[in-house]
Amino acid sequence: MKECPSCGNTIPKEVIYCPYCGARFADLGHTQTKGNEQRQKLGFKMQKCPLCDKKIPEDAKFCPLCGWDLTDHELTPPQIARIQDEIQDARFRAMHWHVAVVACMMIALANILLGMFARDEVIPRTWDFMLHIGYAVFFIGIAFGFCGDRYRKKQDRLKMMLRDRQLSQ
Image (cartoon, rainbow, N blue to C red):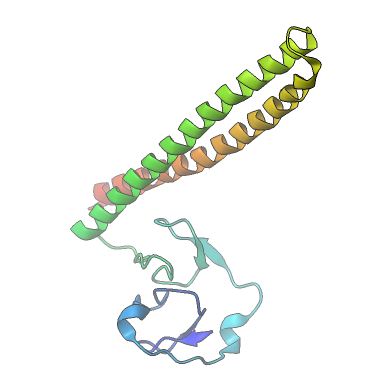
């Protein structure tokens, strides 16, 4: 734990931004470490940052990892630009995971077909293990699909947040 030199609250060592005042630690210089047992109590409620999707304390005003302002207010043009950048990044990452899914499925299909032909004695029996490799790669492709879905959901969530905030302004 360390103490924020800007507001004095005790926060975890690994954070980049203070969750209470939003101060960036690279900008603040030297920080002091000090234990504050009342902040370390069990049952501390958590929430997810709408921008980076990391778990943060429920009473935080700023995300300690990305610095996003969690208070309800109108979005400024730099915040809108940052959300749009995150949407683009999520779209890009989802696309890459889905390309990996297609590649895995093609490799799986080729291995499964080789394994099936090995059963028909067209290919020597030693290639029979290709069927098992095909199944393994198929399940890896399914796991890649879940990773891509995570980014697609983040993209949808950010689009909704941007739309809702802009409609309320």
